[in-house]
Amino acid sequence: MTATTAIAARIHPELRALRRAIHADPEVGNDNPRTQARILEALAGLDLEVTTGTSLSSVVAVLRGTAESTGPRSVVLLRGDMDGLPVVEATGQEFASATGTMHACGHDLHVAGLIGAVRILHELRHQLPGDVVFMFQPGEEGPGGAGPMIAEGVLDAAGRRADAAYALHVVSSQHPLGVWSGRPGVLMAAADQCYITVRGRGGHGSQPHFAQDPVPVACEIAIALQTMVTRQFSAFDPVVVTVGKIAAGSKENIIPDDARLDLTVRTFSDANHEVIPERIGRLAHGIAEAHGMTADVDYLRGYPVTVNDPVEYGLLTDTVTDLFGADRYAEQPFPEAGAEDFSLVAQQLPSAFIFVSAYPGDDWASAASNHSARALFDDDVLADCAALLAEVTLRRLQRA
Ligand SMILES: [Zn+2]
Image (cartoon, rainbow, N blue to C red):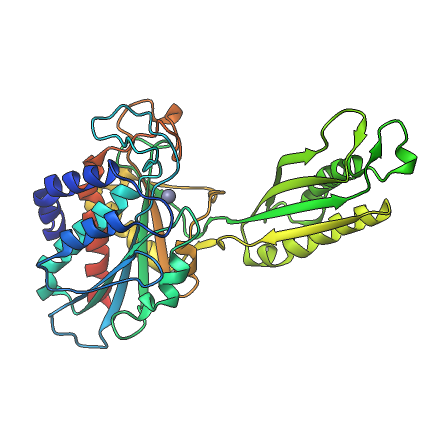
């Protein structure tokens, strides 16, 4: 047992109680005042520099290590997201939310785990030859809290730029309880939205030659998007385009004025993320024009690709296997197609992000996934989450 795991085991009941209080009272988006108040209460009395956000209900705490350092004093940033989802909880747990919102992505465990890391590192601050920034972030599920926190200076909260950043995410399926997973390099996709409206001219369904029917044109675009994906992008750097919604018309004998396609677009490299809006626009405009119509293309960029720095990720997984054993780590062969706004931190700092399974049963392979109303997260993993974040910080600062 290390000092970090010993303290984690001791404070585990308090972390569990905090997690359950947050779980019962989720907040959505960038305004999470009750969660913020719980974080501030948990930090009260510790020797920290605490600030709160101005444009969102974030909390930033800076811990100053008191160990002598031989070289320059490094700064490590640890991030935990705070927000829930507009999901009606159906887990039946005794501390289930009854508010119509749910911590269905486990961010309640991220808050409690990060509070645990604060407590451990605060107790061990005489061993820290550097400083730690704790980033409690709302709005990961949208509209995005990492961007505003970076704009408000979180990366420089210690008075100088952080040297490395780490974060974790619990999952409610895919692996047995307590197994960590991830990969160096690209870990998660960039996720964008695109709305295409084909502008035609409505008319009588019996006389299409007197109208401009946008419906077959929209269908042609939907098919052509899949041809674009396979013919214009490498099979080794894939792109996912899904037309999740098509909307047009009101009745079988009326040609509508316009037809709309709603798309989600996932890319796994900055290069593809860069070019894909232009490719989709060219295709939609070109097909509409070929039929004498026009198309409006509204492209909304979401979070960028999440990339694990190989060196920082190596330190993180070495710490996992040292603390918990090699059988508790499973390297993923492929990235996830989900997205994370920790990617904005990872664009600025060498960073590492890792998943941990928090599903309590043996049927983890078929268990409800994150964002499900039935997703289950066992708070037994909280001590390990806190210990890992604290231990990797200790090692990173002592190495620098
Ligand atoms: Zn999440």
